[in-house]
Amino acid sequence: MANPWFRLYHDLLDNPKVQRLSPELFRFWVNFLCAAARKGGVIVSIEDLAFALRMSEVDCKCAVSNLVVANLIDRDGEKLIPHDWDKHQYKSDSVNERVKRYREKAAVTKETLHETLHETAPEQIQNRTDTETEQRQKDKTRLSRRHVQRPEGVDQQLWEDFKALRDKQRATITETSLFGIQREAEKAGITLSAALRECCERGWRGFKANWIKPEPLSDPQGRVSNQTLQTMSNLQDYIRG
Image (cartoon, rainbow, N blue to C red; front, side, top):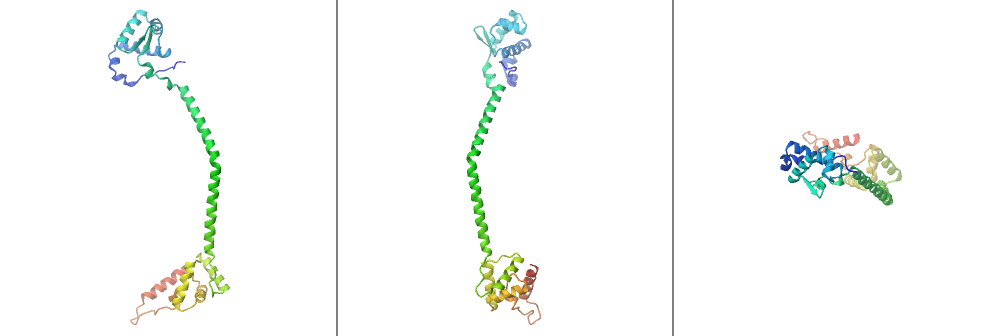
């Protein structure tokens, strides 16, 4: 079935062959295109064209001859064909054909997507399992860091009290923090056990040597030393948590 429409391009405005036609011949040419579109691009004879356009055969033949000379109509024996009809009125633009191609493409895409999802599902499950395993391992490692062993020379009750103090202040006991307390205890000339006891009694989550061996509050002139001011500031920070 022929299309109920045909293309008429706007570049006709710049086509000298068309623009030089007389108004009557231009109208005949457009009507000829309409008649040709009804017949699939081919008018079998002058007689058929004259009947379709409600014209006499003489007037129709005269108009056709002028358009043949203008290279707007091609003759093939008795048949009349608009010039370059197939070039401008290609059949691939059929709506039905476009819809058919679209549906076929959509069906293929849907099938491919289903196969892809079906094939990759085990991989996705495996990847999720691997990720969960890695996360559990990280949690286990992080948990193990919280369980620092009780140092030698520190009794069990004191160690439990110190751990409870650190937990209350949301400060994890690490090897690094414990080493820092040990270092400051040595500076103060006391044992690690004694330093931890000071922490528990005073509510300190850490320990500094000068906290139990304070510097003089002032120099001989009565001025407060910078060391004392810093110590007081540190104590206030730890009291506030």
